[in-house]
Image (cartoon, rainbow, N blue to C red):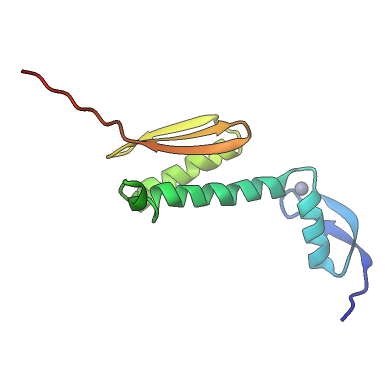
Length: 126
Ligand SMILES: [Zn+2]
């Protein structure tokens, strides 16, 4: 089935900018404008999805596989908010002292880096 292309007023779902675009329907028009809008909302959304996956891997269900415990929901909320603030550029980095490790969230060369570290130390006296 062929769709007729028409000019629609596409609305960016990130910033509300309205631009004319050839599309099959309003939803298609909105998607096209949202993906190409100069506000960069689509890029931020892509980065957010990847970042949230990384948080899940390092602090959520994947944590045990990395040798850490799964962070409880209350702290997880703080981590999510801190990461979002880093992603949006409100802060350049965030650090948390967790029970078993330190967590850092940092903007590095256009990427959001999540790192969880446990310092290991062996010490002896005699
Ligand atoms: Zn936009």
